[in-house]
Amino acid sequence: MSSIPQNYSDEKALVDCIQRFFSKHHIGKLLAKCNGTKEKGVSSVSLLKYKLGNIFVGRSMYLQQRTGSFKEGFSKNTFYRFLNSAKTNWLRFTSLLAADVVNNDIKVLTDEKRKNVFIIDDSLFSRTSCKKTELGSKVFDHTDMHFKKGFRMLTLSWSDGNTLIPVNSSLLASAKDTNIIGPVKASDGRTLAGKRRKLARTKAPEAMMTLLDTAIASGLDAGYVLFDSWFSNPAQITAVKSKGMDVIAMLKKSSRIKYEYCGKMLNIKEIYSKNKKRRGRSKYLLSVDVMVGKENPIPAKIVCVRNKANRKDWLAFICTDTSLPEEEIIRIYGKRWQIEVFFKTCKSMLNLIGECHSISYDALTAHVAIVFTRYMLLAVEQRQSNDQRTLGELFFFLVDEMADITFCHSLRILMEALMASLQEILKLSDEQLTAFTTDFESRLPEYLRNALHPTPQVA
Image (cartoon, rainbow, N blue to C red):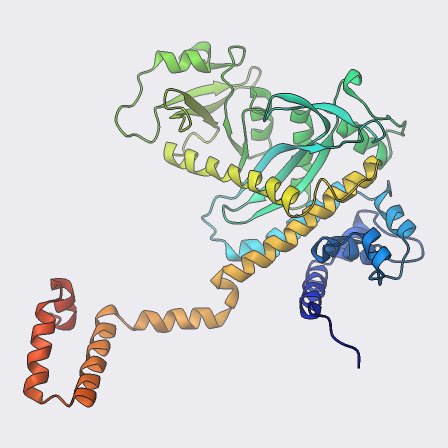
């Protein structure tokens, strides 16, 4: 009799979880919509399913083949051809999948009054072999203000404040030819591969609008778009507003970026110095209304708050929804921190950087999309495991039943059970039990005594 491995149940649960995710969100149909099909041989869904779950096993394909634990019915060449395919539109795939996850899994668990947001940010996608990696570049990492080798992974995500869902991304190379380290392959600009590489050489503010357009076309919507000071220039703010969404962003303290305030064009430092600050323990220091943009200016509200890292410094936020209260602007912008946690999770837990060693830009794009799909799978499982509303009707029946039992009634039930136990075990007489009850109630707070003996209401 063959022995069952110790982690057999865990592997079976993992396979069932991935299979359930693929079936519910029709991954095969989404791949077909994005040209992710094969004419013959192993299906693309099988290859994607293996790549998706491989990180949870803890062994790469190479180690699985060396140890004899590789049980798939395809070769490594088939697998790498799938990743290197230039015709699969991974940008559209993750956008369509994110829209399906949000609309069918997340929104049903979210109150309609909650403010849903798009979050845009970038993170360093480092590469050590940039001389051989296609479009490998020296990119500026504004976290530590140094140039590093690799790409800037510009990412668009959706959030309801509880769950973050990555929507799409683009690995941005340097727009300057002098900063390109790796080879630049010629491609037809009309093809998907050509458009993908053209987007990679686009500046981040312009690429951001492409990611937003793709997300909206896929069926996603949000009331606000959040981003940090790296993207917050008037052209980007007005461009996002023209798409029907409001912007909440941190402002640069630049003397070159100006806003119309009281009929004058002033930068944020001049606006801050001309106004009296709120005193005391206010949540914000200053709030003013301005006009943003040159050709078609739009109204906006600038809110200044104290920098917690440096009490002598201050930060400024801009919001194109002037009806939104200042405290609400600060609260909604706080949701932007979720994308930093997302980047940390992808790099530390989902092996975003170290797993793929391919030098093809198409393969790197596919790898990032698959890592995003892994995160969506985990986000859905986490939300459904922690959110009580996923328990279905049983949860609501229990809630309704508990609501019928008031606090006073519950307290009287406990007291009656206590008295019955004392009389049964200690064999107390009625006089002793009455004396004990009177002494016990005299030691209780007044609101508990009132709950035990409620005053009858006069009709």
